[in-house]
Image (spheres, rainbow over the protein chains, first blue to last red):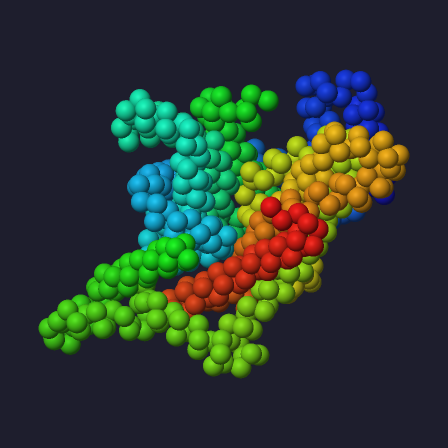
Length: 281
Length: 287
């Protein structure tokens, strides 16, 4: 009971500190902007720990953060292998193939306006479908190893990426293209020097959306069958064995991998599209 | 008109590609069968066979269509083999979760707009959570709730609520912040109260954002429900149909379930789109 009370007290104190911090004059400084969400996150973890221990919630329902952290530290080798299998082999290779294919397709259909007209609605339509459902079919076709996961990822990232690339390539206005024409620029010159750079914000938007779906695709595809390694495999088997601390450790890895992946793409975007208003802000 | 023609052409090309892929991918089985029966396969025999196998690697479109027709119109609605039955199970959980998730997202976004501490502490996490494959926790939620005796609709609805919550939250915060200083200042000169500013300016201007994020949210909800139907031993729902199909090699059943899910998703997004159109029209905000 004291632990539950302690959790309450800590929660109230932390909220009070956050309210004070966000109302103080320094609320726009970088430090406070970082500190407030940090305090909030730590409070949640501490309250979680205290509540689980105080209310005697069994570990098979919700393990406390410390148990997850111990499990994480104790099985870094397994987690690392799972990460390599799911992220490096499955998600990343599928991401590169899918985004590359979509990009090339976009450039190809860019020369045929008719195809563009037809493909955009179809692409938009497919992008809203529960494509992840194709996972069992692709696992049947490509076997249990990472190839089937990469295939799922390819299908998942292709259409959002395609739609963004096509829109990006169409994002130059007549004035700019006319200017290129007065320079007697060839198609490839116009493409390389005007339209591709102008399309970059859209392309990176597609790339960023695709990071999350790539990881989701690779993990969910493993629920349908995989070799005895991989994040999705570990999650589904450990859930079956009620080893929830391992599941949470695996989810932590997925969260870290997801945000690092996104962060990496966003960092590249910052370097490439430094001229865009959204980056200058 | 030209657009419709273009779309039809693209769809036609996809169907043609599909048929030829079906010939190519199912050819091995057809050849094996022919070799076993010691008969020579002519090309037209091959095509006919590859388009009509019972467990093809890739079923031809008309086989999927036939299975869809067979398992929706021809079966009784409450039959275990009816896709309408399974689709309804999935739809129920999706809608319940979507409504809960959307309402929670709206409520929290209002809190974030008016309470700066909440904005500064919750928003970074909400944004970061969009880069995380949240779907990975679906099996855990299902199994854990199952072990405390909650099963069926609720666990799936929780996952679907969770998935639709974040897009709506982020979109609504953007929408409620959409009015610029000029507009807010104008209301101040009218001596409008805070609640007036909310109901007459912020809320109306957030509606387009709400609908955009609801479209994303309902698609995510459906994916969440389908994935949530996988680990419970696959009893009911479209996700279960997919899984049993993959256990028993019933490829046509899997494709039919997949198409049913796709139709459901398209229908739901279209419904939200229709609501968006009529609401925005009534509000005079059609662009």
